[in-house]
Image (tube, rainbow, N blue to C red; front, side, top):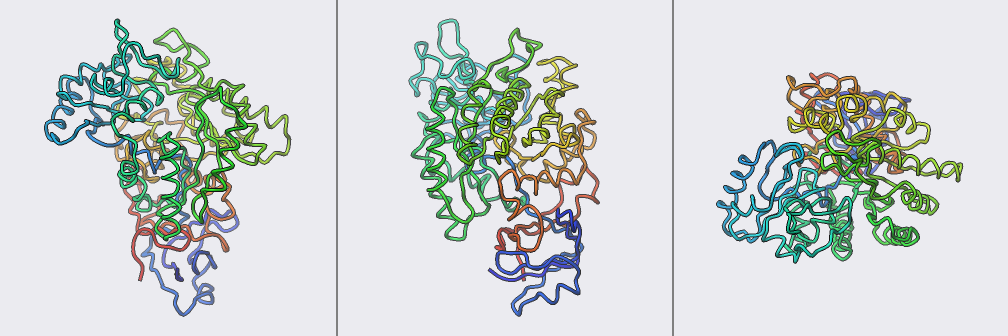
Length: 554
């Protein structure tokens, strides 16, 4: 630890009592002064290092409110299919990758969307058979809710026509007429057995994923994040990863503060058992920058695969999707963890999923007035206007991924209206601006693997929130421009709002005397650059509890 004096730049504090300052002084882990240069000199120690901000911008470290930085990149290995469209382009990329990597026993890949092959077109296993010779292949969709396997992969996993779907109606394999899986694995319950059979889950595989998305986090200015699961879903492996994080922290090598979760995907389980497990994890997995505080639940799947729970039928299919946890089950689990002193974080993509999660939280608030529950609904591909206003009233946090509110992949603005119709798309799709203006507590998070690794940086997501365009594309079609947010609102969502959702607002999220020295020095102010250049602002230095995790000083 050391002492540092930051000066000659703008200090944006996110403290309402003092939003701006000229100087900031850090002693060891804590901020000891925020204010003017002349006053700062009285707080310097003999060992204080002066850091010239060079007219740059100092602000609190970014707090990512929903991500998978430890394990998310498990689904980002192999051939990238990002920005490829159509069967021929995808298969040519896979063929070239397989030919260039003859030593690989398994062909991995990622980045296709449920729109890549055309609306409603599921990729077939025999397409992959043609370009992967005899090797098993597993290619994850862009958000890894789904995957695409070839015949050899299904055979390796022992899955055939007689194998029952793992978690219908959302977790299933579309079938050929003879009953054999056609190729798509819908929802994780259907691709995890394949991934296990192909050796995807191991400590070494997780370390490979961490090298892609966890250890680089400080280079993006991230100092804390909520981990919404390691995606391992294997208790023994998860325990090994927990120990790895604690060991890194105790060695002073953890790159980012981790607030983790216990994930439950089975609505028929016992909430008491979920509480017991969460309580054990909370007590056992603990170090200065690692904790587990939250139960993660799932209302539904995702819109593009028609597994998100909707209030009305999809426009292109005569059904409304389905719940994984119906509102009653969500209430049972969320109430149990809230009463035990923990928080709930519920995945909900469809408007019925969002409403169901809010209904569950509202019952808890009604039955237990005064309960200090900091619950969250995340994703919200669709949210009905009637439910937008409920977030503030119920004091529920809305967690959003701004990139999804653009013409993501150059597909979403054309494809989503075909799923739900023009009217519902215009009214309900990713209503982040409406949520902010309603007074809701809004946090942002990249949710990798729901985006690519290079799209994790908060500045990338902030630009998307401010412009509703894909970052760096000023000529892109804006997606529902009325849903834009101001730069100040986006920065708040990525700092103090995120800190509060993690119950850390007294420690991080703003630059105030006594708080942890979690901060980031940017080469330019997000308020001053052209909006379509926010993503390109350089991260000069990142500090976690007074320890430099990116950049150099002195």
